[in-house]
Length: 127
Image (cartoon, rainbow, N blue to C red; front, side, top):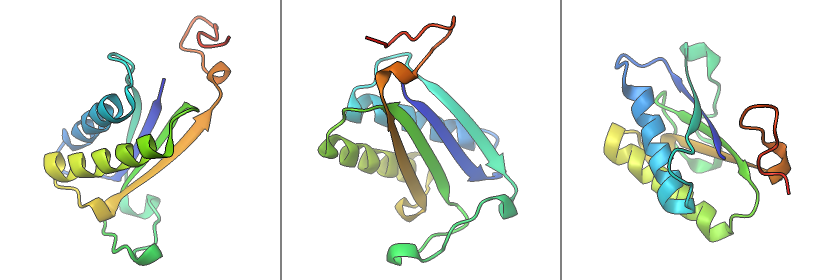
């Protein structure tokens, strides 16, 4: 159940974006207990002018290495779990792909479980 969208500026390393996706999936598994194989991601690279961000909003110095991560997931995680997820993603990206924590923008979109269909036209999580 999460659907992850990751957007970055075009990168010369063809494996860079896939590695970011792996780090995010690992963080989802460890921080909020996403099950094994529950990995659905849309990974997109853009030309520079297609990503817009303020380089100083909230006093955070952002660079052109900005990574946008939007995660749609079922509602119900605690604030502590969300904070742990943000921290785990930022630290993992710094460690694995040398993305500065200042350049990691994360947005969670919580939805009710009935808003998912994983295939076959069935709402697998509907109660």
